[in-house]
Image (cartoon, rainbow, N blue to C red; front, side, top):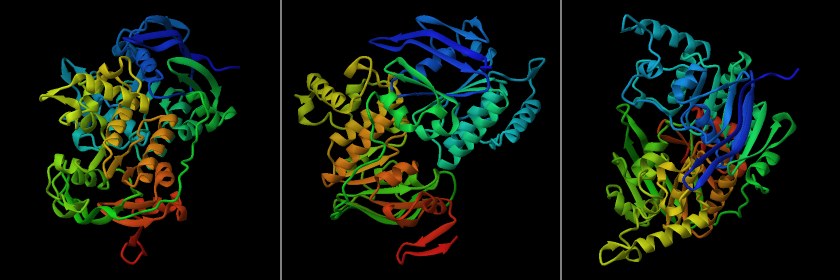
Length: 516
């Protein structure tokens, strides 16, 4: 007997100015299944889930729960129906503690007083049961992104939700945290909870889902059983053409060092010791050097120190022969493109238009000015060229407000802006985070093209597939230090994993391996 549908979204249509985000989509979720929702950036996945969670009202279509039509006007209605959602960009209050974030809006009270002890006991029990360890008294601003996600999941469980929506849940997680999340999701399904799982990552979808629904440009392309398909078939359905899942590149021809770090140190905000501790390496023209490691081992601070977002606490940074250890951000930017880790915080001004964001560093150039005033025609023309070249999709083209674009298209806009500046050094931090296979293929090709033009590319990535596929050399960072240097052709993911976890260490000068 076929499992019953716990949720049915029938003929859902949702429009925004200039775009039909969901065009007559039908999606059925069975009780106790993990149902993946797959599609390119801007295909309408997050919009469809936001309709189910009550954040948007559809123009047409109905939602049924257990066969009965329901009206979901807002997230409170969704919560009352047992529907919970972990958003791609977490909805947490950074100055509140973990416990306060979990119980906010669903407080246990007696005679108007908060029963904190009871709430804490319930959260601790849930945390233990599902292996979601968190420090309940820590402030959200002081915990890692992976921990923040656990807080979001505990928020759903605290509200006794039975239908769990995960929107790109692994985009910000390390490989180890991803494995933990997959195990947790399978536990939920075993208990009879039903999961909708939005993802671009085909490996994860194949590993964890029972069925997959594919959306493309707002339309429903098909729903298939995961066991009856494979990664190539799904990627072709998603993009509408055959996609190269491997990176094809010629061997690197490295030249002179473009960037040199010597005994480079960056202080930590969280503790007294340095987050980057006496790091030395070169990035040469015509190569992609990747810094790999588990999140929180100093990669973020390394990039902040390099780009000027944090002060250098010791050592030197030399770029194109110039010591920039204490130079301003603008001075560094003269020879460096930076694709930042956090696209909202450091990549875009969200309330500016797309065209304004594309000229953020260049509006002072002659081509964009007339007598000291910005030449809007020139800016628009430039923006249209980049939008076409990098396939940045948005409702109103150059005039679209950046905040209203999908995460993947925001990322493409940043990459378009940074690579078009044609600087000798490209610092690319998690450049494909949250992107679909079609966009990943394109961005990998662009980075290889930058390398082949003789530029130095410093890649910082948590995605081991990307690290192995794209790099010409790999450095592993652990607790603020470089603990190993590898040739991707002569190593494997397991070997890298041992160095990333601190179980092995290499004396870089003599390349001797030591047990940790």
